[in-house]
Every structure is written in structure tokens, then in C-alpha cells.
Image (cartoon, rainbow, N blue to C red; front, side, top):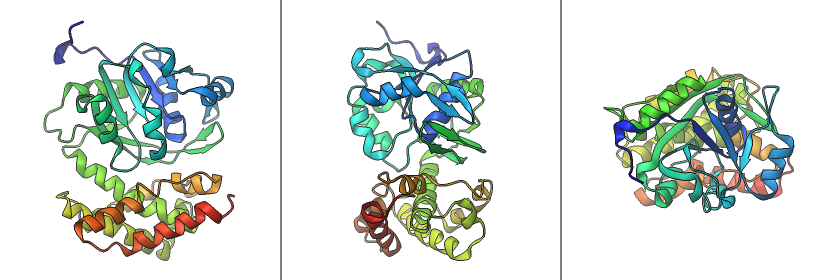
Length: 316
């Protein structure tokens, strides 16, 4: 079978979601609500059976979305949206090949800086778009996901002075699904900006057990968050990424759109007794600090605190 020319690529109609947590359920529900798409969840074993039995409940609406198991040779899909925790990724993609066709696009909304390179090493960089989600306050309890703000979903190639066919295909799909998006000229800068935000608010919220409302008004909580973020700005500049201290300030308008009762993903993990993503937040900052010989004492301290919380502090 010959590969189609770039200008002949079909519209995205078959969408698979890898990871049915808060973010994955948000995207799955949006695509499942539209008749233009065939939507499925990717899962195996016990997780697949639980999803088939219980489905997902998103903002009070029940969804029983088809669950496909990669080891049972499903047909390729047009887009795979990856919404896993970092520690789940390598194992989850090991059997994914049957779902990947010539023109399949991977869109990862995972936290951290590394998921795209991991996906590219297995499936090729030509299939990967970079993505972040900002301003969504989705919270998961069991199979129930609620959100009050759908946020904005930012994606693209590393540079987007002109738009690739992959970007145009995803934009068209997001338009049909009613998903607000943006494609910036410099996507790598946006990845680092989101990394900076996560290093700050996710980690500070986890040690303080604080919802977004605390960061709306408490100066000490804000000071801790900003101290963590400033260390990322220094590392970004050493990596030739154009982040500045003004970007720390630019987070506040987004923060204030989030529900005061909303919780970061790391706070949700701590409260549920699940492993956190401190390895792709604070530990990554410490690693990069050693690489560039830049001190990262605030993140080093936070890493120690979160590791103790994971091991010894009871969940809520």
C-alpha cells in the first residue's frame, strides 16, 4: 500500500484515547459526543474489563465507550491521544503497534518534557505532535470525572510558522469536537512554560494539600510556587528556551480562571495514595540543574518532602 501524499491525507475520524483518567476522560467524552468520530479507549486486562463494566461518568453523563486491547489486533486509528502518568507510558505503548497506521498521529497531553521523545523513539518522530493542556480543572474520583473549566489545548510541531498537514488535521478534528485549541509559533517554549507551571503549582499543592483557591490568595503559598518556578526559568534559559520571570507572572491570570475547589493532578494523587509524578517535575529539575551547574535547592527540598509523603503520609 502506497502512502498518501501530504495533501491527500484523510480527515481524522477514528480516535483512540490511551489513559482514562481525568484528562483522557475529558477528551474521550468530547469525541464520543460527536457522530463524526469513532472513539475508543485503549486498555488491557483488568483495566479493560473495569472500563467495559463501569464506563466513565463525565460531568454526570455516562459513557460506555468501546475498549480495544492492542494485543487482540485491532485496526489502525487516525489519532492516538496519550493521557497517562509518566510511569505508565513505556509499558502502555509496548503493544500499541497494531493501532498505528501510516498516517496515525500521536498527541500527548502528558506532564513533563519527555513523553514525545519516548513515543518518537518507538513510532517515529513523523507521527508526533507536541501538546499541553492549560486551564482545565478536571478532577477524578473512581470512574467519575468532573470539570468546570474545559481549558485550552495547545499543540503543534516544534515550530509552526507554517502549519503542517498533521496540525491541520488535528485542528479540524478539534473544531468538530468543540475543543478549544491554539497552535503557537514556538511550541517548545510552551512545553517549557507548562513544565514551569507544573513544577510550581503541582508540587506546592501536594506538600501543602492545597486546592487552587489557596494559591489565588495566600502569599506564602504563592511564594513557594514561584520559587519552584524560578528555578525552571533559569534551566530553560540555559537550554536556549525563551522563558523569563515575566512568564511566572503570566501564570496568574490562568490560575485565577480555575475553580477555587479544583485540585492539581499531584494533589489528587497524594490524596488517593497513588504514585506522584515528582520524577518528571522536581527530580527532572534537579537532574537538569546538575547538568547545567545551576543550583535548584527549592526543588531538591520539595522532592524529599513528596517522597516522604508518598511513603508514609496516609491518603485522605
